[in-house]
Length: 301
Image (cartoon, rainbow, N blue to C red):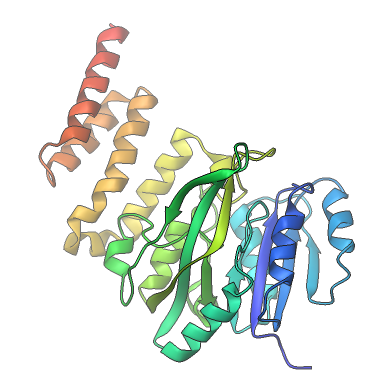
């Protein structure tokens, strides 16, 4: 039997009442040559019971016992895959177009080996009021690594298609950071490949559902200190690249300034304000941060 062309990966934290939406949107794709790997880190059997109802041979269920690091989980699911390409869907999201895979696979095939990542547009949907919050329609293509150093300018994970060979060669999510993010993974990979996109909304990201929005790939481990560790790691990892793209440090420095102020660490906040001023000197964000820091110092006296 030939290996499937695409491996689709869902890592679920235990949301049995809505994961069916994601699974159904994948199984209904017009492009049929894929496997669906579901890594279940939940503590109950409810998710497994939902998955068993599908009776589809393309589904590969993996139970993750006592997860220690979400990054380890997602990397292990990628390692277990056999497809030429990797696609993702969070357990609370869905592929809103039946042609999502067909269009992305078709595009990356047409572009050739230089291109290893293809994304698409997506909308953000509010489940509580049953309406669209926003459309996200980035349009960057080619060698986008310098732009990725600042913000994640293209994607989450549900709108991605990535050559598995990139993960095999350069790795996936970094482990041990607690606060892990798609941005770091995509920035690393974008050093070695070109990127393109399908200019259509093919994915729906759901917010404000019954389980909340937090996933096991970052935001569920949010704390100011975890985020500080992550931002410092990002800046250090790409330190040489930031020398040539100093303005791309701004989003990271803003997070560090804010989080140190929130933690009441005045001297660290001042240090990063100094780093910020060496690039921008002063702007509205810095003025607001300085006022916030001053008020905090005044109240602590």
